Length: 405
Length: 161
Image (cartoon, rainbow over all chains, first blue to last red; front, side, top):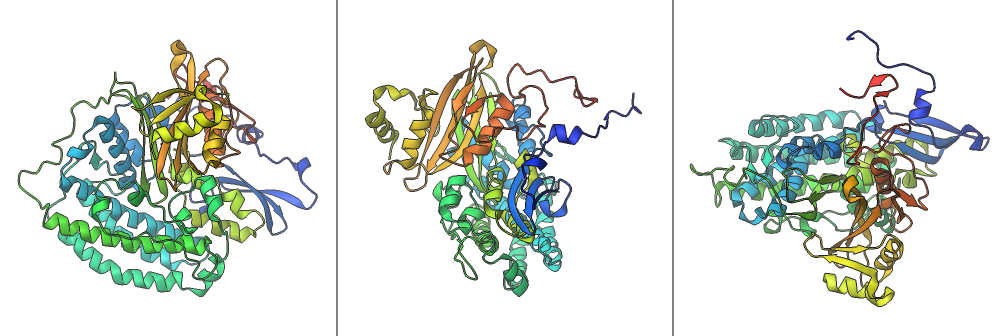
């Protein structure tokens, strides 16, 4: 059996399983359909775009999703709440800490233990989540620059991201999929010396960010490729439900860390950058990238304040047990619950229905920001050039693991 | 703004029968309406200046299993100016799950409804483009239904692993 070839190739397999929306006979004589992806470097994963062109002009874009569908919601209906956390990691693999944080917060609030958590646990959660946010934005900006032809920023940013990954590996044991934040606490306390090394890293990173701005954001070619491209008006953005840097790039100061004020974010002083149309129109691709870069500065501010608290007010003590409140049995009361939080890509939400009788959620739906943000692509790129389609897609910053779940 | 304000807006407009049930246990607090009313309720909440739910955060399908014989669609919306969330639930017949689309009000619902159709087979009436979104178009059955049995082979590949 082992050597048997399972897949039976037939020429019309692809057409049957994921048919194009446009048929040849419906097109006008100048138009043609070109398939972009699913294996294409600038689609950031396995996304397939069916693009209708008229010469160089894009007439319509139809995304075909599902190539990375791993049945998160089906799995979640057969696993206890705490065992779902690794699956949540694998949704948005570039920002696993942020996703974990939101998920865990939802379960804790359902159990009613969210207010009892030690402050040190909360500050560590925010610290690692913000570190992860920086790492995620580095990948977003780096790959975006690479999409539109600049190769150097990617290397510079991956070099700096490596420091963050090593720190998070030191804390959790894994480089990308951490399973560090647990329901009711943390896997471990921070390793001894983490705070000092993190402070050193912040000092190291600040001049690097100035370099980044000179290299990418003020770069003439970069501005020419992104300013006034893919302008997203605010009303359209809200109607499509986009969140995160894409929405803030369009000029609305809407960040769930401030709006909902979860965890210890209300105690921390930071700003929310929005798109100002500095080199083009408000809501263009440059603005979205600019919001990400300025958010890195804000995250550094948050990290500094967390470190201050973690070394003074809530410093390491011998008897501190981060797993103190971890419940033996996670059995929330029967209820419907929707929790949301800000990940680097926007509003990550989880809808739970607990039946009150088991440790397994009756229904667990992940509302992923990328899935919603991606739905705007056809609206944004209609009537633009082919090269701008790539610029628009990159500026939305999708992670296909989260789009398809 | 509280849940009472929202319910009073709806009652003023459509009469007292519009709200079948209020669930204060849910978070955000939920109201239950009839599937035939959902479109006009959503349109009113979206356009009324006193409610102004301009953002649909999440739309979820849900199956209560063959014994209960019902399915549900759950709408989570948020009002950016008034900073309040609301959950609306509708209950559908499991044998013929049909509900009006809200994708003409919020474009977010477009893909979310396609996903609910993909996973539960809930038909959204008047949806502009109701195709499967995550699964292949020729997949059989609706996987998140509680009594789902997967097909044995898909293109000669054994589905059971």
